Length: 490
Image 1 (cartoon, helix red, strand yellow):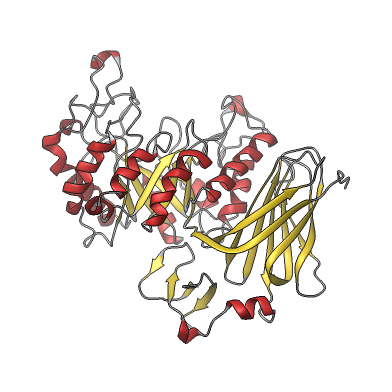
Image 2 (image 1 turned 90 degrees about the vertical axis):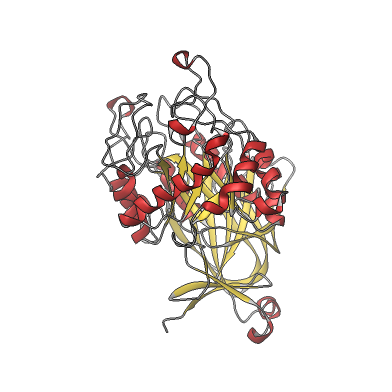
């Protein structure tokens, strides 16, 4: 391996940041239609034993009530959608320990100013903006309860519901506009009508603005009544990279202990072809930057599309787009979803030597007895990566992706004795996950762990969800940030 002159150095700090709930995608393809009885995409993508390890699924809360209805033709906004389409996939995700949440693109048309689920930005609507009528604010959360009841009665306990998909984007498809002030009024005065007790403590997600506009979440969080109703703030990344608006929104969210989810984005330069490897690395960089911005949940757009995780079989995008086969982007996601889920992010400092000419990104995490370092380099040069860790490690594994034909290679990292400083390879144009096993006998770890009777502990399942009562194999997190796996069945 030819290494360009100059090293890249990464110092991993002991400073703790957010705990990562997980990663996922939307259960839809082609004009937002759900898969129906085709559950192969979620079988390929979800669960700890899958190759990819997703654990969050997003579905549409269609603007209808419980009833035996059929999916309308795309654009027939006066006909209700079908809640049944996502049920088969949602059941599998839940069976595999995952999280299912719903997002409305529009409340029922009869609740809106334009009388239809359509957003209003169309000739046949006379440019009448579709908004929730104020005299129907008191109907909104009872309507969400009907969705939760339908899902529960059909075997799916929904974990969270959102206020609205892209409340700041005026569309000619299903949509509803809210200003930050309107969302505040809705949540502050009516969110108590969401029946959390009946529906397994269902969590409430803020509206999901197009570019993660922090005005939407900040206005909620500055109001104590509204803040107490919101569990997760959310948004999308269209036109606004993670280290901009989302990072800004995280300031108040982290102050008040709220999760931050990126709930929709599709990263590609051209959806009219299969992405090249450089574009896959750009996706890896977005995942990494979301973590650096304080994100606790990352949910991609369609899970099945030729530019997503599972192939569609559309002939114009072949070869390489075989229906219901994993695509390269899924393996890029797996670096994060298989290993970062349930971890706590650590601080990092990186130094690129003069003349190295490297576009380099990194992040680090601790989970149980593992310390994880991610490294992404998009250039044509290989480098020597010098790591300085906050604790000694006794062994390690290198997971490497270097192209569409080399999607996931695994090799051991030879460590003769416990060390806190070591060199590892950083190949050209590569995505790397270095997983180290902590040495429990080292002074660094011994100093870090306090006596168990001197520290407060909280517990999470392996998907990062907090448990009131620990059970089975779960993650124990101490107040000073230390985490480890504990099995309460033993």
